[in-house]
Image 1: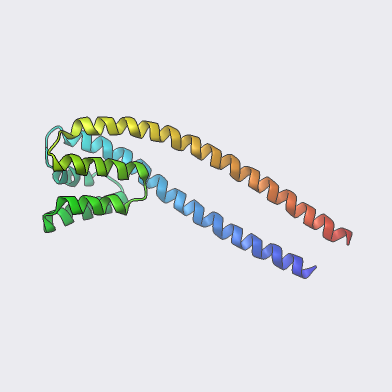
Image 2: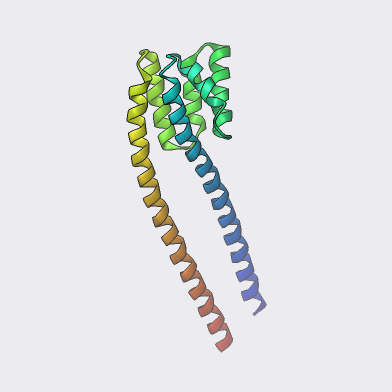
Length: 168
């Protein structure tokens, strides 16, 4: 009987740790996701007055929240000190775990190589962002429903274990 309670406590501890880690990762992802939206709007506005991508990032960096601000600021500093804009943008692209952000930076990096007009690229990127937001909300809904189903199954499983242990 005590072994059963020990197993349940261990499972509960592992489950609580997992839930905490998932919640913290989700919170970090949401912070970055909302900062990316703000970042896209800022670089769209700043690209109207400036053609240097690193200068645009430097100006936008002031208005963005951490943790994205830190990574963008590192990109600006790396580009300014090393003079290698492509390396700094690649490093920025790899530093954030957000698929949309990675694609945006990759596109901006390629366009910076050819000295393109950023406003068109950003407009296309905003459309992709809107599609991404729709996809993410659907995915989040599916995850939420899956978590609820898992909790119900776990509760039913615990009830079955308690009922079977009380019978024997």
